[in-house]
Length: 232
Image (cartoon, rainbow, N blue to C red; front, top):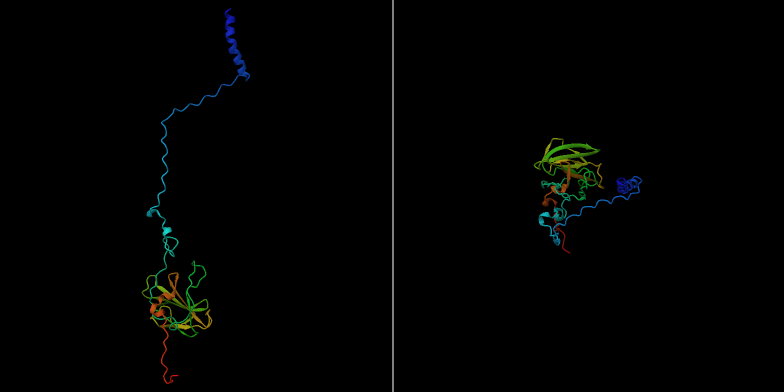
């Protein structure tokens, strides 16, 4: 009697074990995720404040760049040239056949000096006092270079070509002293000219800036009285 009751109580358990071993048992439901406890209510979002204009201290300096100033801050400026010349290299006020055209880069095309009209054989003078740093041919053209006195460090150097030198390297010259004559060959101008250059170190500068205003200015033409001719 007791055995029948025991088997009757174990029958459901044995049925579940048999079904589980054959895969027919219903799978257990997945565990529920814990529900977070409600926290304090969030404060309402404050309205966005309008963007304030940039203060002068935060404005990009490039925005206030002066027209014509170097694009890169700290770029070296063109060295100043003192107006130390006392005479023109040739003539009194020779025509400038071609002016100074500085290149955009050190190796770009340009005209690193000025061409002054001068006939072959014309005397070439030192524009200011200095020392002859070179006198001789370069590429088939005669060249004379002068280091100008009291023009800073490194000193300004002025060059003339094509010139047949009458001075030697190391000679000291004064303003207006003849340093050579214009060569008949080597000029790239019709009718002859002298290429006048100016450098400080390796930087080419405008040689006309050596001339003071009174020397660059052309005198006005004046009509002189003609003697011995009766009035009309």
